Length: 120
Image (cartoon, rainbow, N blue to C red; front, side, top):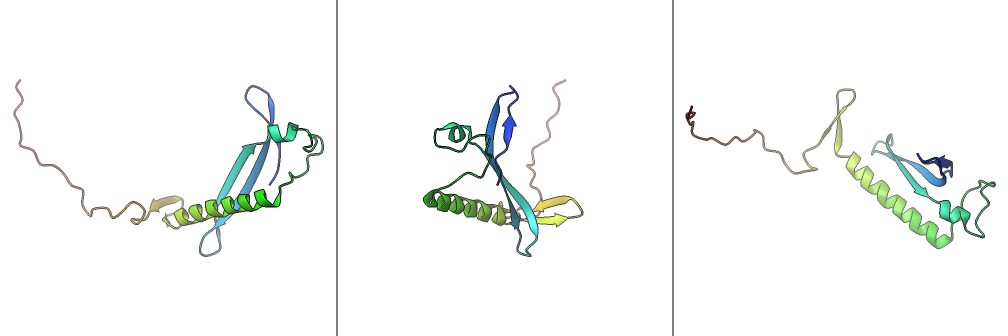
């Protein structure tokens, strides 16, 4: 978790709360990274908030920290569940398993129509 000072396309600066969390698969290997970011310029510029020059970590109350951790766990669970539906195919290709969107028919279905002659 870091709080870098970033710049918009217009050149105006803003403070960003940036958090990167690794998501591991059932083997314990890192499969994905969850990156979350939030504009915290308003909270940095409020009276009583940390000075922009200090650049320390933001202080959370215990109640908000518990809610934040619960949201992090929920996001991690969703990504972990989705990553379980990916199977590696070759070196860099991934294919979704059948269980995600239901069973696929074994053969494609085509509509049969009578042949019509062209009017020309």
